[in-house]
Length: 117
Image 1: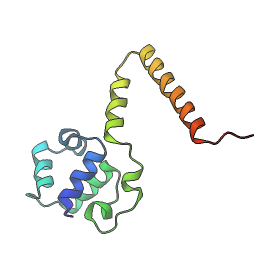
Image 2: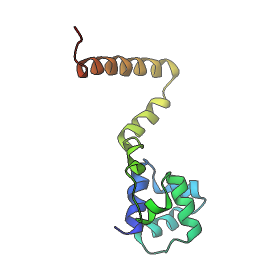
Image 3: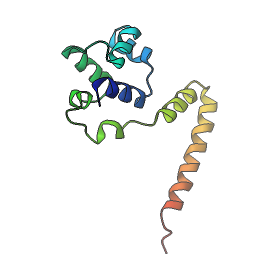
């Protein structure tokens, strides 16, 4: 897999748009798109900045060594987007949703654990 493909995969797994990552890097979205399409070569400095912004190692980005933890510690994009929407709600509504989630998780963990005698 080419570095451009890995860049896209890591960006998407972090739930970032091209515009968001470009802003974090201090570059234009067009330049980032060119990196992702393989039209523009990444400099050493840009590889380091991108790896840092995506919270992966430069080795992961370059495809030298991909660690299991590179994507495993990042929540799913759908989950991140939902959490962002919840964060935009008024505090009272956030509290209701989080209480519902906590109740569900407590019930799910009880089902997963066998009952002790």
